[in-house]
Structure formats: structure tokens, C-alpha cells
Amino acid sequence: MEYPAIVTALVLLQYFWFSFAVGIYRGRHGVKAPAISGHPEFERAFRIQQNTLEQLVVFLPGLWLFAWFVNPAWAAGIGVVFMIGRFIYRAAYMKDPSTRSLGFTIGAVAAITLVVGGAVGAVLRLV
Image 1 (cartoon, rainbow, N blue to C red):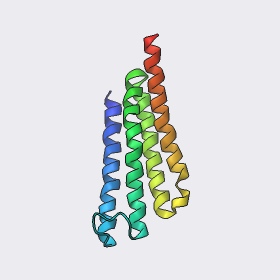
Image 2: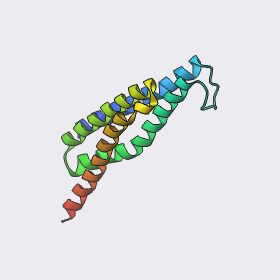
Image 3: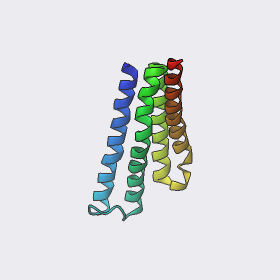
Image 4: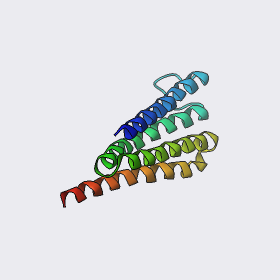
């Protein structure tokens, strides 16, 4: 279970970095807390951070379900795909939000694969 643990730590560090970037853009553009609107660059960074948080709610339990009931190495590999999707999503969203679909889709497909795969693996263990 070491591989899923490593991927969990890396994805959480990625999320921390996305969150830290929000603070940087908040300061750079003078967006005073608790405001969540202001300069477009800040707003894009904020949405990246929020969307990543929304995805983590599905991804993290899915990662561990898949690791436990199917295969830890495969779970970690799919987890890395999720993380790459999030980086692609971030790069595209910061440049032009209308181009974010590829990164979002990569991450979402990885997350749902983990959840569905983990659920199927659990059901198969009952049989």
C-alpha cells in the first residue's frame, strides 16, 4: 500500500501548491479576503483550487477503495494520471479557461475509474 500512500501525499502537495498560488495572486492583485472576485488571474487560480478540492472528494476515497479491493500499484498508476490531469487543467485554465476540458476530463475519468473499479472489486469479494 506504499504506492497509493505516496500518490496521496503527492496529490495533497499538489493541492497545497494550488492553494498557495491563490494566496500569491490574491496579494499580487490586491484582492482582500474574504473576496473571491477581482482580478481575472486571481479568479482563475481560485477556481483551479476549488475545482481540485471538489475532485479530491471523489478521487481520494476512490484511490484507496481501488487499492484495497483491486490492486495498489494500479491504483497508484491511475492516481498519477489524475495528478497529471490536474496539472494540465491548471495550465490550460490559467492560459484560457475555455481550454480546460482536456485536463478536467483526464482527472475525472481517472477518479471515476478508481471509484467504480473499487466498488466492483468490493462486490466481487462478496461473491
